[in-house]
Image (cartoon, rainbow, N blue to C red; front, side):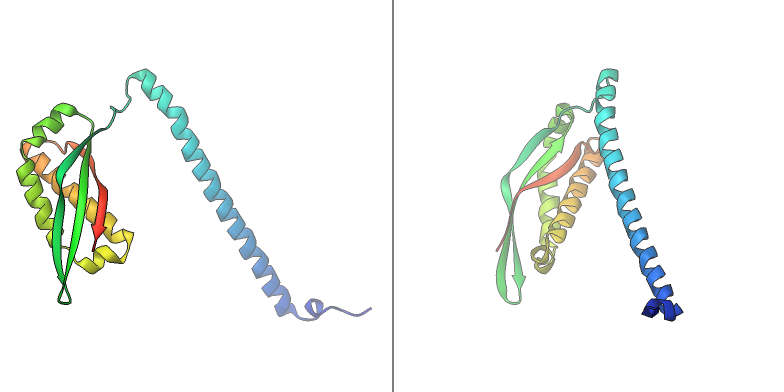
Length: 165
């Protein structure tokens, strides 16, 4: 009876065991990830009706478009480049949003200054740069709201149109 290669070489047996352990570990990690995701998603579905019944439901979102759109020019390598951004604010309380509207000139000024300080390459390179810009813009508006109204007022700022040229 002839012996196979793996019976003769103990190092090959060790490598085979290592590969099997790695595959089992990977499958276990994937299974845990899927299970945790399923648990979190289904837990949120069951918690929402309970919160609504208890009167803890989150108020509906209110959106306020900022008009006109923001236009910023960049000088990149001797070429004129432009960015046009249409923005909507998401809030939950109309009275707070109305109080913030009084300060719209300050908000628009701060946003224009922040937008013009960005690098064109960062924005044109990937959606990550645009998302970072959106988060910075949200922080700018919340900062003005905190200072003038006493609370952040908006949940987030949304780019409803974003053009780079």
